[in-house]
Amino acid sequence: MSTGKPIIVLVKPQLGQNIGKAARAMLNFGLTEMRIVDPRDGWPNPSAGPTAAGADQVLEEAQVFKTTAEAVADCSHIYATTVRKRGMTKDVLTPSQAAEDMASASGKCAILFGPERSGLEVVDVELARKIITVPINPEFGSLNLAQAVILVAYELSKMDHSGTVQPTIEKKKREPAPQIELDRFFEHLERALEGSGYFYPPDRAAATKVTLRNMVTKPAWTNEEVQTWRGIISALEKPYMKK
Image 1 (cartoon, one colour):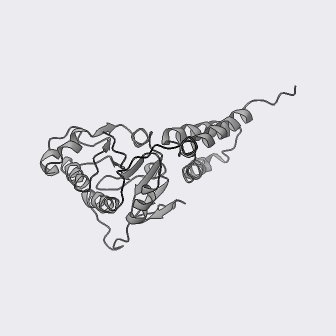
Image 2 (image 1 turned 120 degrees about the vertical axis):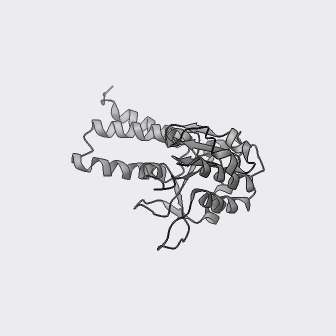
Image 3 (image 1 turned 120 degrees about the horizontal axis):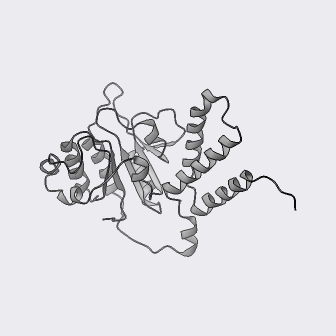
C-alpha cells in the first residue's frame, strides 16, 4: 500500500529476524511500505514475525523483487545508505538533510539499505541520486540493519509527509523521471556509444560506463528532458540523409 511516504528497500537481507526488526522500526515512525530484494532465506520468512513485535502490516504488504533496479523502477528519488562514498560523485547527506530533501520532493522516494554483512554493492549505489551517511566512529562502523533503518526513519518522522496536493499541469511537467526511464535512457545511450566505438580502450569501458551512469543519475531529470535526450540520441544513430 502506497502512503506517499518514503519506501524502505532492503537489498539482499540475510536474516528474517532483521527484516522483522526493520519492519518494527519503520512502523514506529509511520513508515509502512517495505520492498525486499532477493532475500537470502526466501520470503515469507517465519523468523520475521516474532521480531516485528506487532508490525505485521508492514511484513504482510512487503513486496519482493529479484533486483534492486526492479524494486525502484517507479521511484523518482533514490537514496543509498552507506558509510563509504565509494568514490562516487554524488551528494552526501546526513539523515536529517535527506529527510528535508525528501519532504520537498515530488514523485516516489526510496531508501536503499544493504545486507547485514557487507552493505550495498557498487551496482546498487550507482542507482541512487544521493547518498545518506552518518558520522559514525571510523574505528567501529558496525550498525545493524534495524539500527540503520531507525536512524533514518526517526529523522523522516520529523517531516510532514502526510499531506497530498494535486500537482498543477506545470508541476507535472517538472516531476522527476522514475528510475525505469533513466535506466532506459542509459541503456539507449550505452548502445549508441558502443556502436560509435566510444568505449575505447576496451579495458577502460567498465569504468567509463560507471562514470556515465553517475552522470545520468546525478541531476533530477524530468520525463520531458529524458525523452528529449532519447530523441537526440535516436537522431544521431540514424545516418544523415540530405533532402
